[in-house]
Image 1 (cartoon, one colour):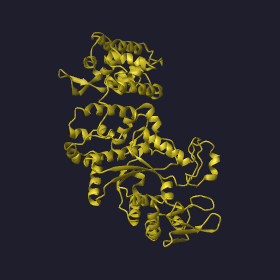
Image 2: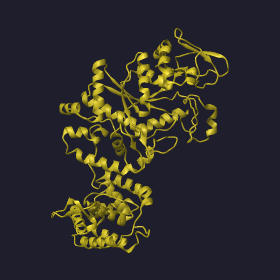
Image 3: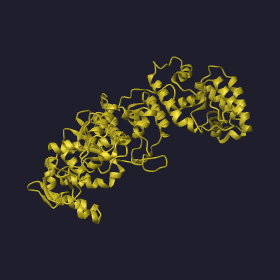
Image 4: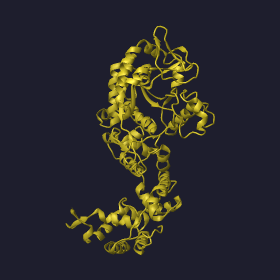
Amino acid sequence: MQFAQLPIDQEIRDEAGRSGAWPFEEARKLVARMERSGKSEVLFETGYGPSGLPHIGTFGEVARTTMVRNAFRILTGDTIPTRLLCFSDDMDGMRKIPENVPDREALVPYLHMPLTVVPNPFGGASQSFAEHNNAMLCRFLDTFGFEYEFASATEYYRSGRFDAVLLRAAERYEDIMAVMLPTLGAERQATYSPFLPISPSTGRVLYIPMKEVDAKNGTVTFTDEDGRDATVPVTGGSVKLQWKPDFGMRWAALDVDFEMFGKDHQTNAVVYDRICEILGGTPPEHFVYELFLDAEGAKISKSKGNGLSIEEWLTYAAPESLGLYMFGKPRAAKRLHFDVIPKAVEDYYQFAASFERQDTRSRLQNPVFHIHGGAPPVSGIAVPFALLLNLVSASNASNKETLWGFISRYAPGVTPETDPELDRLVGYALRYFEDFVRPSKRFRAPDETERQALEALARKLAELPADADAALIQDAILDVARPIERYQDTKKTGPNGGPGVSGEWFQMLYQTLIGQERGPRFGSFVALYGIEETRALIDEALSGRLAGGQAV
């Protein structure tokens, strides 16, 4: 996921200017923006709420932004510098105590205090809850090789980085209120203020109305929690802004050019833009992505825990596969659950294998171009991931050595040393099988027609040479099915003009021999697993030992 330094020639730039890949479409908007503004640098921004740990959505936002950033670099021939600012809203008050922290009671006195004041409940070198989570964010982003700059809201507010725009917000307070109040209910309107003062008496972030906003002196007056009126400056970190005005203020203060956000922000985007304009800025280019769904199609919620964590994905697959998942159709809602991992892995290596054969136009459409900044480090894999999973399933392998015994026979000369990428996949396949495939395996006993078909298949395989390749084996498997009426498909045409073979044939093979509903090309599986081993597997199925629950 690194921001690669791909050499950019004119052909690449020309094709990028016409490419329909969404990162180039977004980057072209930025090119036009730079032409209008005359700016000498482009600032990309992503936001982060440090009340929780980095999650899969954090990865997606930074990865997708990096894809647009790299596309812009290609379009401009790398002549305009770019920066990516990962901004942590760590001055926000702790509105509730997270479920996953130790000794939750110890944090009760710090409710509604800025997250940079809340003590770190996890121990270690970090002093505050926000500092701990910010460190986790940076470690998280560094793990994936992202190029970025970290920014702390607390540091920016306290250091004066936002002072000029905050003073302008005091001057244009009524204009901001005119934007905000129509978006609120009657009860909230009565108490709303875009300024959230930090209580001088308690240190808490206060959601209260202002008694006075003094634009001349740059101060706000309010009733503090001790019942007395307090006047504090809007500068120097004595106040922060509500989250919607804060969006627009930050855009104006930092002159942000691009920020993407989830669909849940879409209705507020016009508010962010208008606040930015009121404060003298130009709203950035937006990209709104769809939210993730769980296996049942419900919106993923961190509090419900119904999603898939970044740690869980990376237990069973490499970051590149997650990058592929993020690249595909970002404006479409996608289900994010464990079952999507094998397909993402399989698709990634298929795209990687095709990259070397493609012309420039096709490469710019290929996801691996955008995942790796134009320079994918791999060009495919000797054994597809789906085949590895089926090999683990059929062989009952529990370690890499067993699997490599099959792989080395299937692909002579390929070893863990010569193909470390495949060795990494072997490890993922073993873990994924053990946790997800094995518990769901359900063998069924063949009926009489299926028994006869399996017996015929065992005889046919015995006739093949020991070194038969996947294509020859697949043809033999099809030859067995063609005469059997149950497996004939009249919508397909066989090699001699007769009916083709239906998918029911292969489904039967996987249900009775592997204990799954489907799988990759069966001839490839037999070539990898071995002809004699497959015949032994058929004997196991015919004897009833597989359907009886005995492990393969």
